[in-house]
Amino acid sequence: MGMYETVRRDEDPLVLDANTPENLSADVESSLLNSPRSDGSGRGGGNASKRRLVSLDVFRGLTVAIMILVDDAGGILPAINHSPWNGLTLADFVMPFFLFIVGVSLALAYKNLSSGYLATKMAVVRALKLLVFGLFLQGGYFHGLNNLTYGVDIEQIRLAGILQRIAVAYFLAAVCEIWLKGDNNVKSGSSLLKKYQFQWAVVLVLTVAYCSLLYGLYVPDWEYSIPSETSSSALKIFKVKCGVRSDTGPACNAVGMIDRNVLGIQHLYKRPIYARMKQCSINSPDYGPLPPNAPTWCQAPFDPEGLLSSVMAIVTCLVGLHYGHIIVHFKDHKDRILHWIVPSSCLLVLGFALDFFGMHVNKALYTLSYMCVTAGAAGILFAGIYLMVDMYGYRRPTIVMEWMGMHALMIYILAACNILPVFLQGFYWRRPQNNIFRLIGIGA
Image (cartoon, rainbow, N blue to C red; front, side):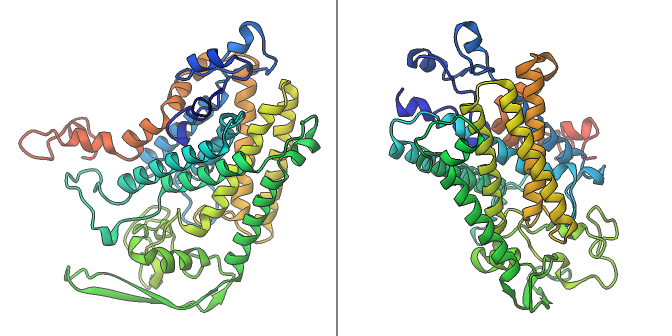
């Protein structure tokens, strides 16, 4: 099998196809590039080997559906919207689920390599594509619903974002999968760990580095400015007092400090999630006017996809990579389920234990406890979908999710990034307010 055929399953990690043929010849595999199949049981042979492993497509589609739900209904149902700070809601599972899926996909896409250098080159190109997409879609070029203007000041463009984070996690996980795996055969759980021991060493290094920086860096006082309400040219300056270490609150955490100093505060997300906290909004847990005596940090930019928090996002991707290895090396349904459920349960227990002892579950900081809980939940959900769809063949109830999973990036761009609504709003009758969305009662 040529390297280009092995790697080119899709053009983006959001929909990187995990359904790589497991027991087909190179000729058949080449003919199935646009509709890859896999033996759900891993046994191969006969017609069974041509059955598509749809679990990951369904899981990806379900994640897309949750993303659309929380984006559209989160304002109406704050309970499913992102947690203002500590805690976990339905929306907080979306990002780690995508990263987990990317990891599983990579284990299958890079299962057979003829050239590590060419595979790395392809990974670089694909990651750069995602980075460019992310800057264009989330950098501020589009001004949102009910606003037909566009364009962004390069000095103010948002540098981080969802696709940028996925691009970085995808690339580093791909490099690990291409270069950091042993040659030994896998016959048990211990031999699986031994084969990928250097990948687990990377997980350990990233986790230790993240915790050391989050809890060890000194965060000094800092300030920021926003346009004054009375004059568009005047700036209102706020000073935030910190002078602490190990703080994981909204104002004085190391995640925000690193982003302000490396990326620049003008390039961060200007609608911070903590602006929905009780201290910052009279409509909490939704956005709203500032309450009297609100803290000075309430309006400060903060990026939920920042540099330090993305370190643990990479770990989520590497955890997903391990779950993909289980598909590659274990051919029996029960073995796969067992090797998924055990680590998933351990991750959940560890995550909740860390939260109980003070390392709170926090999506904005992407804390270790948050990584454990969400990765564990992803593993259990994936195992459940695999059990239902690939083991017992209940595909009909999930056919919509499967289709959504196969077109995840397209749906994300059109729906979640509001490209389709903004495009449709561009067609109106006499006044911009007279568009199809106002006609059906959306955005009225």
